[in-house]
Image (cartoon, rainbow, N blue to C red; front, side, top):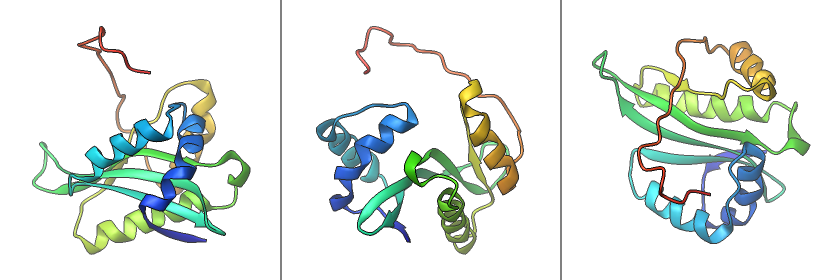
Length: 149
């Protein structure tokens, strides 16, 4: 298994993973989205590859805290293909991000995870990895007329 930065050839494997994460998307839309996101140096997409296939990914952003004078990593998306779960892949992705963050002098890693009952396994995984529950996330749609699939 390789953990590495995203490359354009990885795009073909990502829509299925996005669907498993609960955000279905077609390849064309995802390609446009990733071009916009990854054009900003603060964002990275880390992938786990086995035998030439991307089986997991994490989308991250480096941010500066309002409450402290430090930068940190915000994990915006994390998924492992359901056929490859319980094999330590997500932990290896997080290890890769954590080591990169340490080498860059970043303060912490943070993430939000849905509060649905189907996310309990993910919550247990995060807590076992060493994350602690620190806040709730909230969302308010301010342009609900915009079509978002």
